[in-house]
Image (cartoon, rainbow, N blue to C red):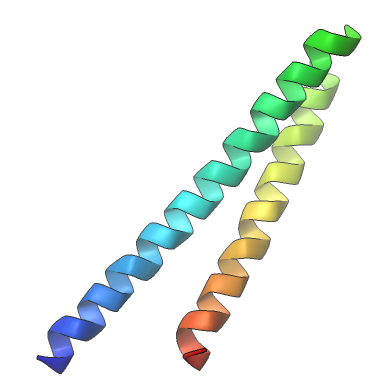
Length: 72
């Protein structure tokens, strides 16, 4: 029973990692596109939003992994 519980926890961690990375990246991309269309600067804020979204996603992944292994 304990082995099944650990595998479910591992699957939950992988789903959290995937959703955080994809979600933060998409929010960054769409925010950048919106700013580009509002200000008339075509790819600048899209690229900045992409990098900020990726950085935020990686940051939240580290927080999730730390939370998973410390058991908080």
